[in-house]
Length: 204
Image: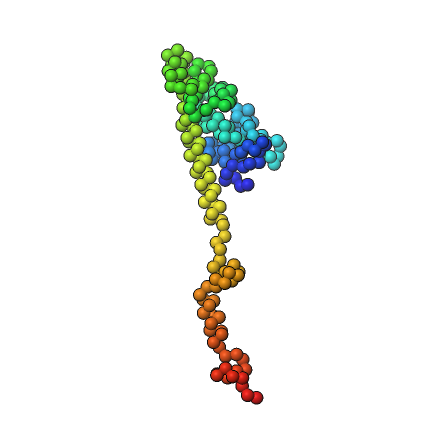
């Protein structure tokens, strides 16, 4: 499997995304991804690296968490608070994250499942610092994954050999090109060696 799409080299049939793919989809550098994994901010949940020659494989849920971390850090949120946001997401497995918003309130992070819950947090004076609508995160991820898949398909199509029109397959089916037909016809019209112009054998 190349690096242009997800790989199925994962346990229990899970689909995993390699490091370069993750960086392209999430919009981060490989150095960032490697640092976050080594410091424990966000380690891959499919396959972690174990020594030289092994590759990390990230799940789709990992991509969501990575995208959230990127958005929080881009918005000026500290790495410590971003870590708590990731912990909040991981404690909400099975929840439809696309229908929720991640709210950083006070020293904690809350997953609000409706606009009403967000309003309640605001009214409760929870010191809301940042709100991340996860529907937008999921939408961006889907668009990036689709673009990556489209690029991989285009590369695969461009590298596929073009069938020759004057090759063995054409001869086997009897579909010879017109040029070959004309050459064969001309050869048939030529007198054989040892024959006169009338096509009769020359006398000794």
